[in-house]
Image 1 (cartoon, helix red, strand yellow):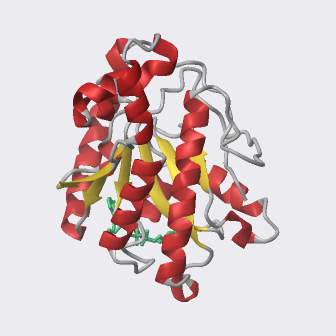
Image 2 (cartoon, rainbow, N blue to C red):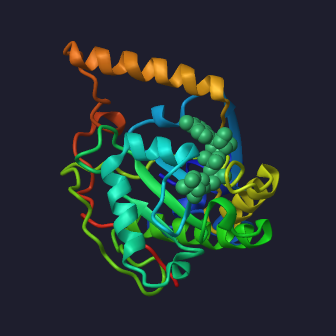
Length: 275
Ligand SMILES: Nc1ncnc2c1ncn2[C@@H]1O[C@H](COP(=O)(O)OP(=O)(O)OC[C@H]2O[C@H](OP(=O)(O)O)[C@H](O)[C@@H]2O)[C@@H](O)[C@H]1O
């Protein structure tokens, strides 16, 4: 699944993306692909709602290490995914010293109690928030490390050998995981760090592309331009969606990609990585 970009971006060479498993009929090309990384990209979209992303998508946002989703998009996450918020908060509470979370990622599987089936990737990019937010350069360093960790954790889930992501890890039960947890889909992000955390978006964007190129096998992040007006529009659409559901419409997304009902029996955990 993650090699889809390889097939579009790197053209003929990329056919060897599954070389290891697929019997290597393109030996030379697969050597080449191993040396030349597939460039990862951030694709900007305007006027769309991140929360309307397809079932199974990963929604990425920047978090403090203190267990607060108190403002900006984090508040929207808290309202829409209260169960995921509890997982995040509990995760932060496991640390006597919150700064040990810095530079790690927490991947929260879709929670039964939440209406939407999205994976939520929390990047711990600053210890504090508000006046105690870390300096932009520090935030960028932590962003790089936490993205690398996120990519490793995603790979771990996809390879069914989670929750490792490289080094010392902990497994934490969520508040309840779907029996047919969707496979991990595309990556979606707000313009992380660019609001309350006060870091120029172009700088964060460069870091994301760097990590996707080096570690992410050329994955793509769709990033959302957001305006307050957009917020009002999202709110209106959301109200309509709820109304439709109440009227008995089939409000849930189709049964996964290509209608395959069950996921791969995802384990009921969240993972985080190197400390
Ligand atoms: N509904 C929506 N859809 C799409 N994009 C939306 C949106 N709402 C806002 N945005 C945009 O999302 C970007 C990031 O801006 P944000 O200020 O949110 O986050 P950040 O990454 O700079 O900082 C993280 C800390 O902010 C929080 O608040 P607390 O510190 O807890 O109080 C957290 O808890 C963290 O600690 C900006 O482009 C906003 O326009």
